Length: 585
Image (cartoon, rainbow, N blue to C red; front, side):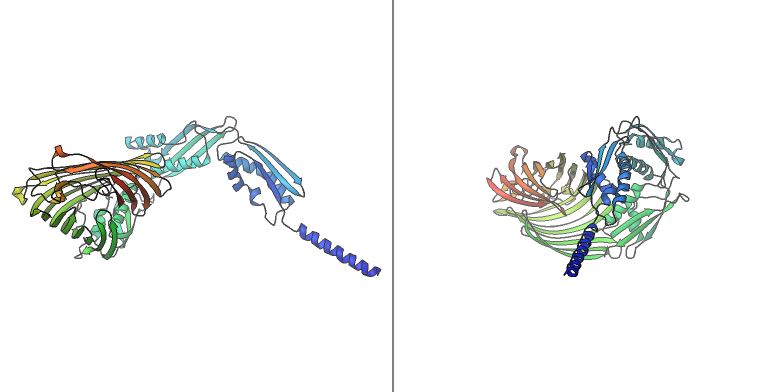
């Protein structure tokens, strides 16, 4: 009996020893208590080694003691990047309930501040020219870490990069920082900054080296170029050139670069790599508008018409109230940057009781210079106008028209600040294939003003005038009607104008004003309140602005702001739904 009991006791002891060994073999654990300002606590927790090693299976007591001893130095190094060079740090490591607790208390103290700055640009930049002296003065004035500013490591690095970039972008693309030093006095908490930039040689542009051209002539790229051989290097010229290539429709991608080898700074080749778009494209689309109803259309495009890089575009559009077929041939840019084109149009409309059938053709010369677009167009148009109860008329006009547009906004797709302005002037004469002598002027301004981070104000003004003895003989496109999605909301499309029988026709005078307040509830969704007023008349003394007001929803769609509005037309005492995308400009 005794041996059996002894064996049982021995087995139990072995099992207990094995179990205790398993327990001891579990992961070594410890706690960390960090007392530091909240704005720096997360940074310390994410970067201190003592946090990273927690729950590591290789951790043990000796390793913990080594990490604990090293942690105060790590804290000093990390907190110094935020401008604190004399922090008070207290630490304690204690055993607790079979485990360990590491405690750290951090008092950053007073931040170090910039006491002085010595910023210079060396090399060929320092040639004594007034141009470079002015550039240096501007770089120094725009330096963000001025005396009195709190010194932070990331601000220091960003300031150096910003100063270097201002030298790189114009004439000196091989520039680099040759010396930088931040001298910290921990007793006074002051930092003296010194930066030297070596400009390297001045570069000039050379000729174009093209790759990727297969179907289009070299002249397409050359006429879009913004760089001239022998001209001083400018990064903005390369970026503008690249953007013009990408916007030209001829290419799906474009990359413009220049070699910046300091050993060969003169007439450096400008490399242009392009990927061509297919020259022919056929597209189909369907849609709807609260202005002109349901829509189906077919588009055809040929970017290499007659193998001469002429751009042919034509559209067949069938809408409830408007049907049309138009075509345009655009010729390559001239050396002066002009785009010439010819066009033709067939169109039929039935709007507010006025039925028109028109044919037109013409020529246009346009040019885009920065934010300004200009266009000079000559157009011949013959129009058959039918109004119920009135004898049909055939109106003809050969017109010369000039348009000037400026788009000065922060974002063309989603503008929140700036303005869009368009002015037009033109007319026709009996002596030159027109049925009536007339002159026409028109202007439209849309102004965007931010009101804080989530709110904005949109103001719109539109005015037009036709100087003529009467409206008779003038095609409807040169007269004015208003009402609809982006004019006076609360009224049907082009329902405001001159009453003629049961129809509404165009008048010689137009005036519209609008104010809209938008609040963005979420980054892509907003709500709007608006007030519109305006009218179109044939005599100034008859002008009386009708009013429309309401509310709507805004969504930042991939193609521009989508607007869904419910408006009340005060003069017709009706609610009307309006739907539009983007801004008509």
